[in-house]
Length: 209
Image (tube, rainbow, N blue to C red; front, side, top):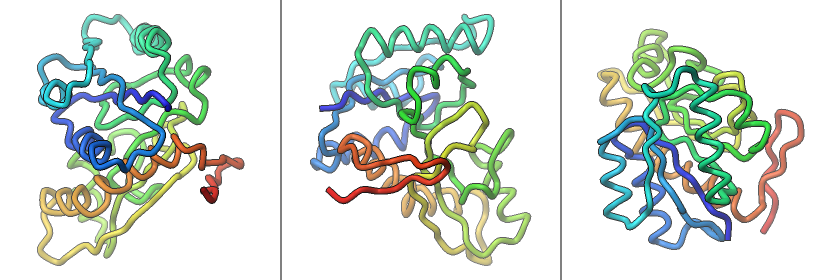
């Protein structure tokens, strides 16, 4: 049984999707062991408490650099013997120390079809604002392994939805969350926990069970 750490910084809707999937038995050979927030008193921590999941706060403002916070995070992950790290709306930059230990073991969800609308500055509603401004006809979500370069790690899963003529950034965000993110992230985490993901360069191959 692989031990999962979920990193959060806000409301925790993707954390809730993982909790719900776990309660339905959809995360095979894995269990959410801890929730770690970079911001105190966010709703994600309440979600963890309601689900009986231990949680910790590593408040970003108390660390002089991204590196010092990453080292503190890594110490906590090692202390808890975590196998896979899931970034679910984690808005704090982490540095190479994490990836040196958790190579191809840090998973992130991004609310667009990478490589479109990705990279520095592309987070939250900004992603959907850019997609609508560009005039794309489809958008979606991407689950990928995290590397040092922002939103550039190997892609695990993607799913698309139509962009409709009257969409606002908020409406598009909600459609992508409901139809893509909340399904894709638990699915990818379950595949990882079953040892069914093999990374060949940039390509992630999904192995038969």
